[in-house]
Length: 246
Image 1 (cartoon, one colour):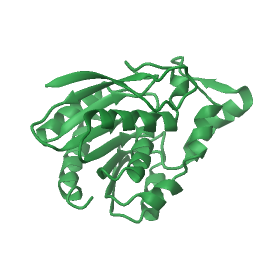
Image 2: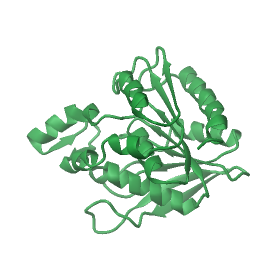
Image 3: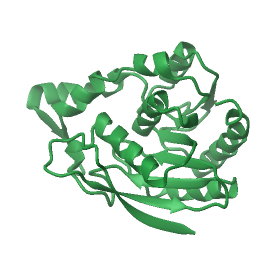
C-alpha cells in the first residue's frame, strides 16, 4: 500500500519567504527496515522510482520516494533546488518518518545527495547509487553558461543560477571521503553519456570504506528495462550483506 504525504521542510536552504512542502510517497512494509530514494537533478519521484519502491517492499523495506522542492508535486521553484536544499529536503523527509536506521539510494545528482547525506547522519546503514555525480566538473558545461549569462534555462523551462554552483562548491567529494564510514555500492552504465563511468571508479579508489562498483555493459545514463531489473537484483542482494556492516 502506498500512502502520500506532504512534508514541511523546516530548515529552508533557499531565499524564499517560507519553507516549502515536499511530496513523499511511503510504500509500507511490515518491518523496521527503511530505504529512501533520491531522484536526479531534473527528475522526480515518478516512473522508475515507483517500481523501485515496489521491489523494495518485496525485499522487506518500507520504501519512500519523494520530490525535492521545485520538482514534481513539491512546492518551490526549481532554481532553489540546490545541493544544500536537497539535503535539507531529504533530512526533513527522513525525520518525518523517523526511522531508527535507514538506507539510501540515489541516482545521478541524487547519488551525490545520498553520499553527502550518508556522510553526515549516523542513522544511515548503507548507501547505494546509480551513476552518481562525484566530481563537480560534471557540470562544467552548465557553469560556463551561468558564468556568461547569469543563469541557464533548460528546454523544459527549468532554470539554475549561480546559487547552484555556490552550494556545489561548498560540498566537494572530499567531504564524503573524510566522513563516510558505511558500505557503498555504485552501479554505472558503461555507455553513460552524461556522467563518465571512470568517475565512479576514481571515487571508489578514494573512499576508505567497503565499496562495490559494477559497470553495466551497454547501459547508458538511463538503464534499459532489463538493465534496471538486473540492477535491482544486485542492489537487494548487496543490501542483505551491507546492512549487517553499516
